[in-house]
Image (cartoon, rainbow, N blue to C red; front, side, top):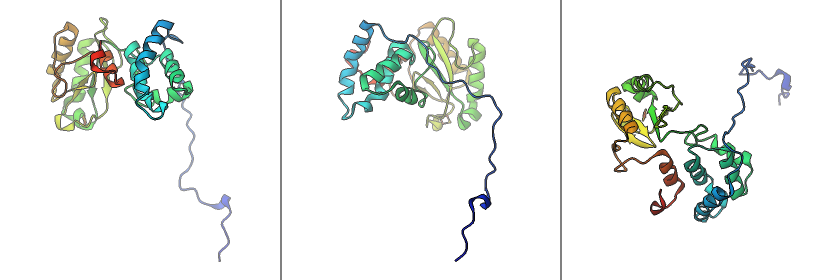
Length: 224
Ligand code: FES
C-alpha cells in the first residue's frame, strides 16, 4: 500500500487568484422603513387569504413580495419588513429572496415596465437594435424611467419565447416578432395611453402594479 500524500504536496488543479477589484457596494432597499398603520392593515387583509393557501406560511413569500411590489411599484424596506413580520422570517431571509429573482425590483417602476430581450437569439435578430432605438427615442438609459412616469426600460434575459424573437415584454406580457419600428410604436402608445394588446395570452394590457397584484394571487374581482 502506498504512503498517503501529504496535503502540502497535492497538486492544485486550479491556481487560486485574488481579485483586486473594489468590492461591490452592499445591496440596499429604498423607501420608508415601515408602512403607516392603515397601509399595513390593508396589506395584511389581502395577505391573509394568500398565506392561508400554503401549508407552511413561509411558502407565501413569493406572492407576498409581489403584493408589496404592487403597492409601492418596487420592493421597499417597508415591503421587506411587512413580509418578514407576516411570515415570521428575518428581514435578511426576505431580502435574500427579493434579490435573487429579477422580477422583484429595487427601483421605482413606471406605469409600464418594458423589457427588451437581448439574449443571443433575440439580440442577433434585432433585440440589440430595438433596445438602442428605445433608449435613443425615450432619452433614457436601461433601468431608467421616462419623465412622464409612463415607461421604465430594462434589458431582460431569454423568456423561452425564442420562436418569436425578437421579443419585448410589457408588464410580463409578450409582444412577439418586434422590430425597432413596432417597438417604438408600442412605447408611443403606452405613453399616449392608447390600448395595446399583447401578442398572446391576456387580451389587453394592465399596468405593472396591476400585474403584480395578479402575480400575488389577489382574486381578479378584487383587482383595482
Ligand atoms: S432569446 Fe429572447 S426569448 Fe429566447
